[in-house]
Length: 288
Length: 136
Image (cartoon, rainbow over all chains, first blue to last red; front, side, top):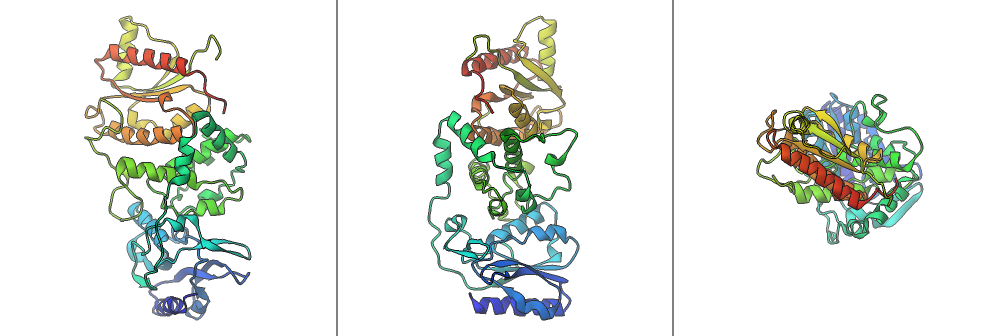
């Protein structure tokens, strides 16, 4: 645990709350298992001592910003989380001057579970190139030294190389256990629609029967709605109670969006996302 | 493959161009395969990828989206948006095991009646050669 970093965060939050600059700080505290982290909302300056930051802080707290619109909030954000803030800014969901962003240099986070902390960094962190938040008001910590080498899409290339029938079977197999609890949606900072298509009854896009293809339709369209918007925090996969490899879908679309439109979500609050704009000259494989 | 296999095609056809072609084929009269079920839409940019996915997951063998040539959209930019969307959807469906050939986006203007009937015939033939989709 980097005590200096934690003291920085605590000191800053104390000042912010005391001066009334923010109503609430969203950060991390030690979970009751004494090992991992959990989200914490601080409203009183006296409570800031509970704040921590270390490599178990895997949660993307940006989701909570959508729930606290209009309030002055300070939020602790890792680099990947900061991309989600850019996404919400870009889509007009939050206002920049209502959020105080405490960016932290990211050491990478490890796999965690109840009373369990892994040794190695999460897979997404092993190939993550982003060590510094893309948007912040205050930057805490020191630039970490870690390798960002590694092939980010090796597992995706493997799925792509399967023959079509096998791929079909592969996905139906993976989507079969889905219980459609929608935890993946609830935890996603990019899923903020007041009414999700999956809950529409007329037309009923996704049927209520228990069938892998209905699950697949939900998962495919969920991923498509996040195409060019997913910032790879991988919270959906972490939240999934059935351990469905959702990042295989999300990263596939991330890869294709990069190839087709040369775009990565959340790197800038101004850059137009691929589906909000177009280029008259492009062909994209459709001949005229 | 069943001997009498007839592919089912859902066609989302733009009112301002291809729909006129389909109409013209009827009055000419030129015939095209009845495998296509035409849904008349105001613009190719109107077609939600969700509709396409829903078609496939409900058992369609192929989906055709036909709109005006880029630059000729009645609403100025609908087909540019459609092009971006379906370029990506193509790749997602392929990844999920639904062959690229089963989803087609075509540009046909209102004066290209022959082209429209040609596209429907070709598409039907290609899908028949591909055979029914594997279950699921």
